[in-house]
Image 1 (tube, rainbow, N blue to C red):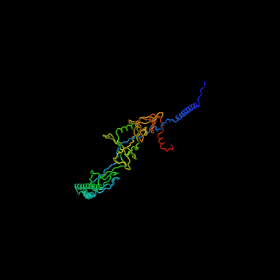
Image 2: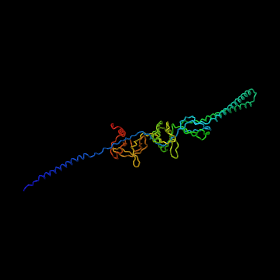
Image 3: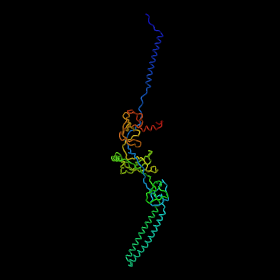
Image 4: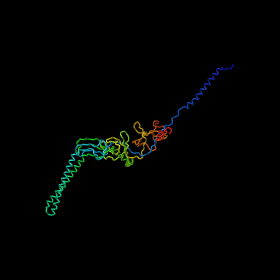
Length: 401
């Protein structure tokens, strides 16, 4: 039998197929580690800025509505009847107590004064004659050349003359006062409003016509309203020691203008009214505020921020740290064990100096997220950094970070 011999071209072709397959397997094996090396790594935990809650003294403040009222107000009225001949003040200007504002025609009152002085001179002359007659009869009575009845008549005539002189003096003084009242003067110092009468107007003595109005505007009052319930709760908190009283010299009132800006000068609370408005259930608190530049006007509506006590161990967080749930409840992000974040409900009070006062839900040592909320969900691990440090780093130049 003859052995089978393979053809040389067939053997060469088979070897080529085996070499190609081996090369393909080697290429696939080489690509798999490369693909595994290029797979993305999991992202690092996000960095968030936190504040560590601590107890601190915070003033108990309330923003309440109020109206501005003048410190003093006086209506200028004529004290004698007559014709106004001159106005001597500039409308809207500052006047001082005793300044002449109007002049009433003085001629009729000068005539009355002259008549009163003439009457006084006549009565004084009659008194001289009566006194001499009484003295003469007293001398004659001692010599028993005049009767007691004659002396009594002369003495009574002297006393009558003295009374007439006193009456004449009073009439003269009244005429002199009326002449002085023709100069209508400012009863108080302050800013005077518009003139309500002009030259040529006839005014009556003690009439209802008001010539002008003067208001003292520096300092000025702010009348604030607060509910009886809030005021009583404040008093109970002060009595129980939950709130500490302010020092007597503390300026506890700040006026908030209509553009939400704070009036630069602080004020001082004077007193609380003792009567509640039966229609609103509110009482009036009066504060006095400096007004050197006359930025506050009587009748102006403002809001007043009142410090009514100090919470010595209060808890507060930045405003941006407090969020609202769908049902409107306040909540914060807390960094818990393992640096994982979670939402936590809180009860908030007023905003004091840019911070929410937390009445319930937080304790000293809790870590609250203040920045970086967009990078977290509940249960996410985070890298907490102090909020102040993060803020300073963001504000510093890139070369100094």
